[in-house]
Image (tube, rainbow, N blue to C red; front, side):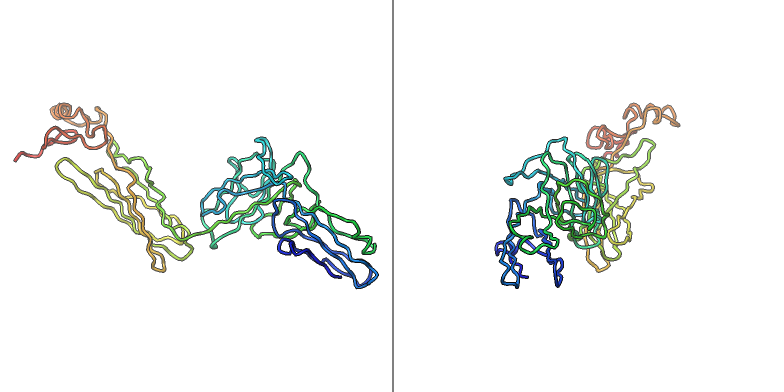
Length: 400
């Protein structure tokens, strides 16, 4: 038997020979799985036999597009990204329209379950049934490979039923009886399981080892795909950030508890050595200076490293600059610096300031600063003039 397709269809379709017997039954299965046409497409398969008495017959297959269109925004994701999943209805003329806000959907992951998960409201998972629009895909923070394909299936119930595909099949009839005047409507698809699939020309297994198999119920559906790429290694300071609030020296007084976090993202090699530097610059009326704290830590791959700054007995604020350097086991160095915030002070209450202090000194403290160590800005309270004092007692430098 010869199977022939029109040249215009050779790049868009694929056919499978199911089986042939030496006598009697002849049959094929046709699979329209090579793409997602936006409008109706047609395939012609011509059948002929070695018996010259049997005429040649053309079989027309009409491939209709999916009734939905599913897209990711963005379509290309980096680890940790979140993509909106946009679902539109495709009309018979190929145009796309929005669904009403109360439309419910069935959505499940086909491939890429290790690369992330679906989000619907506050819930996360691989499959949801009867959820409203607005669902999303959250990419995993790390990837074990350089990239991962993400594929989902989205179905819904349309007011007009979807197109039912039909199998080309035969019993014991002759080739002429099978093929004469037969036209078929076929919706393109790739299914994930061989059993329990109705209204499909053929179920093709495309099972990903990381995804579960779900029993989908809606026959009006489409697929959407995106790609998550690992990208180049990137050093990121996770905490503090450029928008971090100022740290405070408390009224007890105590220095703040400052915890710094960083990660060499997209790195799957060996150990990474982090070198931290936390520097505080201060400026007073008559002098300035800085103090620096350093620490080294070693973590595996893209693990997050954490460091709490050891102020020890230093009580001094100022503007903060944080620098971290990451050195991989291959010797490649990544670095990042930011100026997240400042360390400022909180004043004690008057009763706390007077506690344990003799009366003459209390009078001095009240007269000089009204029991204030810091101005409203959080920086030390300065006295008037070039040689004015500072703080709660306003000590002055001796005049020259």
